[in-house]
Image (cartoon, rainbow, N blue to C red; front, side, top):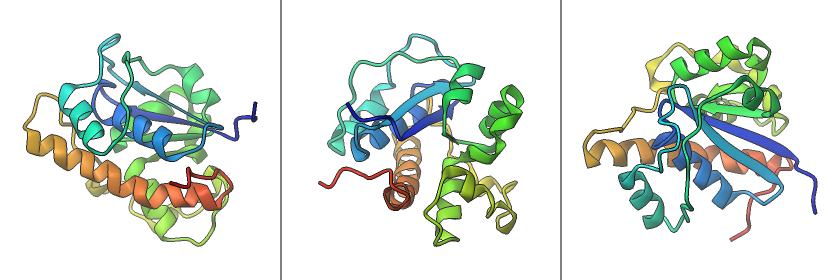
Length: 182
């Protein structure tokens, strides 16, 4: 059995829409030696993935197995090599729990923007060196919460996640965390 090379934690609010969507898409795109889990800052603990999110995943051919929402914990953050959040507020919540995670905690869209600004395909911490080149206080790095909102809002959030992963996954591949060659 291969050793885990990278442990990714994805964080949103309820852990039923955005973070499980990103978790499932990352699992689908990355090899088995990368561990991906998700949690929420205000998780609807025990709930399944939102039905609209599940439909969007399945329409992309991503299997969404049974799921149970989980509350974010310090231990989850500590064991993650890379923490990807859906908003700047989620990033702040992660850092309030574990300030030492700063160099490996990014909003998903911020991580994608940082990859766009560098040829460096190194570790998650290496991305942090490029933070000064972005205005990370900008709301453009937030992915809207689709919970209890329209199908269009769900599609928009899902599209934002997909676009960011389209940039980030090849970076992880170049960094040696190889993606699934489908």
